[in-house]
Amino acid sequence: MRTKVFVRPYWTLPLQQQFLTHFSQLLESGYPTSAALDVLAVLFRASEVKKIKTACANGESFSTILKQLNFENRCCYMITCSEQVGALLPGIKKGSEFLKFNGQQRQELLKKVNYPLQLFLGVLVVIGALLIFFVPQIESFYASLNLNSDQSLLNIIIGVIATLLLFILTLSLLIYLTLHIKNKTFQQHIITVLFKFKLIQKVMSYYFSSQWYLFLSCGLSIKETLQMMNQFETIPLLKLILSTLQEKLEEGYPLDVLFQESPYFSPYFKLILSHALTCGTLESDLQQYQQFEFTYLTGRLNKAFKTIQFTLMLLIGILIILIYLSILQPVFDMLQLF
Image: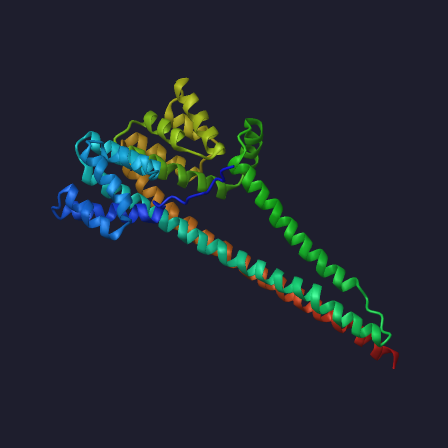
């Protein structure tokens, strides 16, 4: 019986960005496509670059080749649009900038999430090791001295840890279900709850404006951008929102009215959108808005993680004090007898 072996794809997102950046620089310097790919075969895996060179020699479009190599879908679409108007180089540069920006955002978010999470898990491991290995030895020592230890503090410690773990697991489960469950009824309930929070509206407004600007910059109409956003979206919750907006547009709702009545977006985004549609400056206004909102959300995220870090450190300190008190409590009881 054959065993399936998972082979990690070579073209990860960082490598995709590096490849497109180097390729665009070489083309801009006057290198022919074939010579540029020969240079890139030295910088990247030669067998992978050879596939691209062979396909180019056979007359395949560059965007089609990238799709076959599983490059990021939106990036491929941007290059496709540029190829259709005979401007491959600007499309490659635009694709590399898009991947670079997304990569920086992803790395920054991961750094902020990983530190408090690793800190919390590390402390849980240390506390667990204390409870499993160290505390029983102390209790057996007290038992040899005929001292009875009170388990109330230990029970409090275990209860606090269990509560924290339950909270993290519940939150993780809700996030997973929100991002993966395709049931429309479930998604509708989630939407009803989530978009009552202004911060969620701001996050949605930023994400929507960044994706909308991306497809508008490819020369698509407003309706076409919504179609492409829906086509490339992988999160069921966002697909449902995009489908709802599309259906209402097809029913004849004016775009301005549709967004003003929508519960998904922040009041500020609605104001910017109304101004952009009135003045005909939608693309430039969306670009400015997403830059402003990214700065704002990054600041909010920094404050949130500082608060989380302080809270975790406070809880860790309390847990450590409780552990020491539970260990020393029998000694205090013994001193009271004298």
